[in-house]
Image 1 (cartoon, one colour):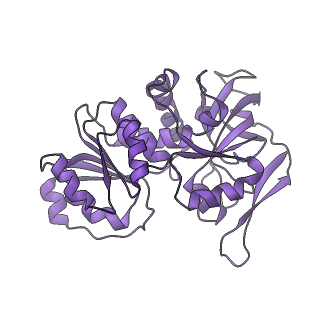
Image 2: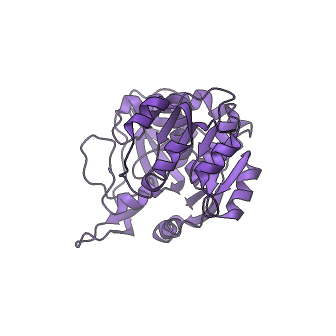
Length: 331
């Protein structure tokens, strides 16, 4: 089959991608073989190409030649002990090796694609919506009527986060972006308030919008540069979920402030979870989120599509941070 292969840079300055012939994958017991129709591009794909992200579902794995962390396609085969799927089923999943004509993945991570979704839309769902559902609902335990702030809300995960917050009854839903045009688009997706952090202090704005109480939940995709201000605009007993760290990993914290406000700081990632934990995320997603994708209460937002052969160009486009929603590769 054809696949986009990660070629490491011998000088350690970041690798590249090459379109190559590779061996056809064969499903092991419990796995599905998926004929890939589309694969989405994620920020983690850039880290994976640079050798700074795990490359296999197996703990301790250090190498993988095929790029990609999610895909959508048809079930082309299956190993022993697979239940709930048939050949020809339309499916989507988190995976490793999604930038290829075929991929194998544990069937417990795979969910069926709602009929209304096209392939490029389905490919944009798993990572963003599963990540944000796990952060917002499973970990932050959002209750209807609570306020939610989503930082850096215009990327794929942020777009999913604001939609999920609205779906599960958050009010108000507040989003930050440094681009006024993106904020206008986010308003059409349901945010109650948009804050341009380049023009005003977002913590001051959040406090004003919540009558001085602060946000009950913050879904943070930024990290270090906004950490102090995130803390300042958290409500009593507020929860901050660290999903991404685009601006860095290190910051300081006033432990007295943390204690007096009774705040909860929550870290989430898929990288240190067992297969069973990942499977539970997929199961809850299928039960609690998939129906809303099926009836259009939720919808993936696609910024741009590229042919799979142009995956490197797609990653470079993503790195420019001009996108709104997901960037998707199609076959």
